[in-house]
Length: 222
Image (tube, rainbow, N blue to C red; front, side, top):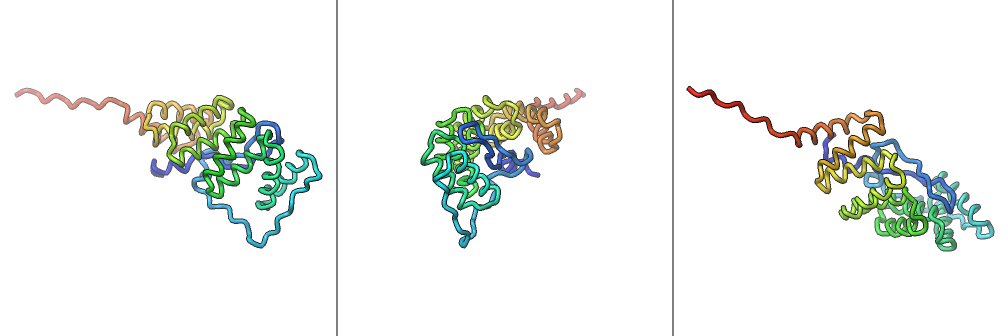
C-alpha cells in the first residue's frame, strides 16, 4: 500500500444509534477502513415509496422509526423522519448528526457540514459530529479547521483510535508536520495493540526521514 493511499484510511463511517437529546454514539467500521471519501454516493431506488413520518408520535418515537428505516436501508423514509425531527426539535443533536452522515455518504459536502455544525451547536459534546467535520474539512482542503475539529473530538473522547489516525494522517500528508504525525501514529499503535502493519511502516519511514544522515567515512590520507 502506497503512502498516498492514506487519505482513504481511518475515516469513521457509521450510523448514529443514540437518543435524540444525548451525545450520539457511532458504530464505526474497523480502524483503517475506508470512509466517506471512498464511499459510493447513496442512490435510493427511484421506485421506493417514502413513508411519511407519523407526526402523532412523540420525538423519541419518531426517532426510533427513523432509525429503524435507516437500519433497513429505507433511506428516503429515514431522511424524511430525521428532517422532520430537525425542523421540530432543532435542540436535538442526534437527528442532525444522522442527516449529516446521510449527506456525507451522498457526497453532499456543504449540506453535511451544515448538518454537523448544527449538531455541534445543539450539543457541543458531540464527538461524532466533530470527527465528521474534520473529515469533511480535510476533503475540502481546509486543513486548519480539520485539525481543530479532530482535536475537539479527541478532547471529548481521547481513546477513539479512528480519530487519532485521522489526525495523524492530516499531520503527515496535509499539514506536513512529521513530528506531530509520528506522535499520533504511536498513540494509534498503542490503542490498537500494534496490529496495523501499514502504520508501523509509516512510523519507520518518518523515523528514517528524521534521523540525521550518516556521515561518509573519511578518506585515509596517502
